[in-house]
Image (cartoon, rainbow over all chains, first blue to last red):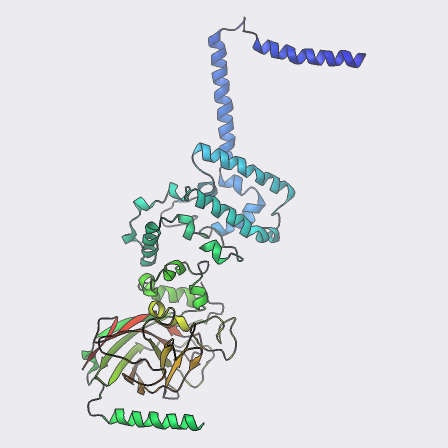
Length: 204
Length: 292
């Protein structure tokens, strides 16, 4: 009997809350409500974006040892880390889209990586090396499908003067332009070591 | 054995005829013959299998589309040699002090009967490493190919004969020599090969088809080399037309050409190699042999 009373009270409480939310306010002006809603919106949205951007930093990426000990040291040897112009492309510059929509899709996809972290998919060097080709193929495919969108945030055929390049680069870039190729077709391994078990099909 | 003796006899007779001809003579003054500068790089371990794979050689893609090695690399041969010789790339066993590259000058002329090829270069400093070929401080060899029948001959000079399973390669087999894909003298798929060895002071006239053969050619008349004031000069005298395994050279035609120097008592892959060039007989090419 007591249980029945309690359940009735709970049902009443929920429907009461819904009823209260649906009831027009008699105490606060519409302007106050809008203002509070506006401010709260800014706080929530700002907070969400700030949190999102915190995950879009190199510090965040290498806060996990999987990134810090494997791919990060390789990247530090490359031109995207250190070069004569002092411009640096960090992890998210290449691996996270800049546009909001694409970024959200990528972030949702990346939530899978949290599961990987929890179960330790690549928590040792050996496990990482065993999975390197799979991981690389996944990223190559993403870049290929997006026409190397993240590369093109900085690099573009339209602004490329091949005559100022070394001969070997100009020959290859001119061929790539003719064939409508995309950056990742040739520049695999530009910031990380190539998987040793990579096949010719991965390249072609 | 009998056959070999007969062939040697025929070759000797041909040589005697060639050298006895009053018309046949190397240019009296080589300084009047145009010289082509060619850099030869220390190639490390870069066989056909390496250059044709995208994951190892970024240029594989353009190579498969018909571009030559020189179209990308002509201005950076020395830099490539430096990178490789230091062990920075594709050299698992760097030799300290080994020259990164050699700049050679190539001159060519002919007199309607013989082709004369002169190679000159400054002797690089010795590395001091153990001598691989005790007998020969220096060897120089050139290869000729007609018509681009050998895969890569037109694009990459001697590279078409360089394979990962050859002797002195890290994964090589002792005794395995150079060879070319589908190599066959009968089908004309071969490189003509001439070599001069400094210690033995001997010239070799061979070819590379399904394997490398150092003798049997009938075109090479002589090769003479000398080292003066630290500068090498080697002159090959070669009949325009020889026999089996000898590319027949005709006025107005061009041929695929590459050469290599085994400096510092080197053996096998530890040589310096040119990229691919063209040799023209009275025809426009990278190296032109004009009639004297």
